[in-house]
Length: 233
Ligand SMILES: C[S@@+](CC[C@H](N)C(=O)[O-])C[C@H]1O[C@@H](n2cnc3c(N)ncnc32)[C@H](O)[C@@H]1O
Image (cartoon, rainbow, N blue to C red; front, side, top):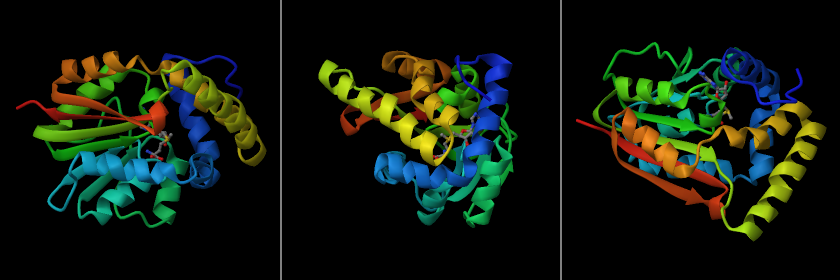
């Protein structure tokens, strides 16, 4: 599969699922390598931002191989990890991630309304076909007052930082990814940031879906971000 263009709709759904199934075996190693281990720090920051602890019933949306789900479980939360890529889930199972792992689509969650206290998601927003649809599902499955913490990549705003970041993200990442894993997938990684709406729009979409106290924090000089919010009562 070549991702010469950025797919949309059903084509995006199918290509993204197939791509993650293909890169699953080296996914964790590549994350650690390409972020120098910062990816795990950002996951911990997201869990802290949502004050995750024992007593929480947490959905980790698009859980992949289960890094965020495992960290949430270690904080005492009861965790459901959901992803549509069966090979990613198989890796999570093989690693013994302490969560109920479910195959499903973020656009149509197989969970009852108001059934969880927290939703987290790591680095998945830009992969969804429709953010308003997914945000509406998050609002549905969260109980009133429930918290959401969503991590994704970003690009710095200042010109010089943006240029330095682009050198790494747009050149080095596809090169290293191509050598060690899958060229198309690690070309898609920087390209897919263009699916993400501007910061203000992301926050507005969350508010429109039924979240309040919506905030965004920038990580590593603007190269990643965490969005948080509280489900309106
Ligand atoms: C970049 S990976 C992130 C995995 C994990 N959250 C992490 O922190 O490493 C994106 C994940 O989103 C999943 N995904 C993308 N679209 C999805 C959808 N519509 N429903 C469920 N999972 C989806 C992919 O299968 C993949 O595992």
